Length: 318
Image (cartoon, rainbow, N blue to C red; front, side, top):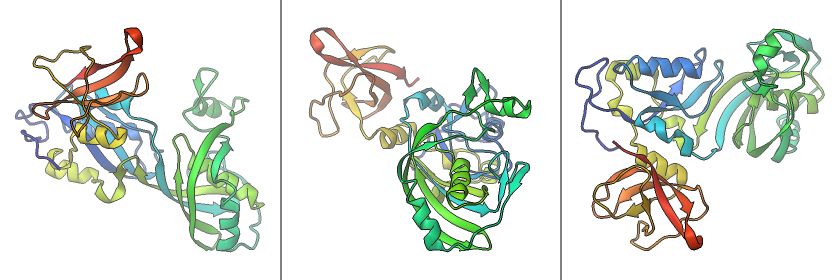
């Protein structure tokens, strides 16, 4: 990880500029918003902090967090796949589809083996129509579903298409299965647990969830909140250009001297020094100065006269 030219200390007057991403191992019991607040309190007033994808309060694991100017790049990250380790408890359903809700139904658990559960899990692979939990942040007629649920409103959740890349059953004992799941964006593992039980002929809920990967952020390199409190943010910050390049899988080089926001470039080079095609319109690129390799900001492909493409510098690093 590249060293930054400043030292971040808790509320330090030596703070000059924050830039980068934190890969945080969120503890269970904290919301994603709580984690953002924790990081914000380690920084001078006014520094922006945001996360790249909500993780339920009862879940733990990888939560990418943007600090400072990096928050302005969140919109350019493509929807990414995620990996989880989940424990599914059979025999009980809850109103939240996890262990933090009220029990609403119980059932006997059939005699199951790892093979039985694996066979059932194969039915999820690929595209799958999933009904999200009623207690979720999804909007229903303009309001969050969890508000409607708390009020006892009568409403239906609309099924939506999700994608399961891989499901591996690690163990099954005493009515609980430990399962690794790799899935696309927007997938609810709580719904997966509920649906798995239904397919096996019994009630089920998610009793434990650990997110092990979110895009390029992985659990092995995640830091604890107490590490941030003890050592500051600097040792754990990942440069925004490196994270963007990993997420987008590309980078662009342009020539110029005094770069400005909304500046457009007709000639763009790739890392090998060849003129490159900008691809689809609105496609985002991390942009670098060709002569020095200095990171400039984020640009998007735009269409110009005659069908030609240009790269517009939308987010200038200042």
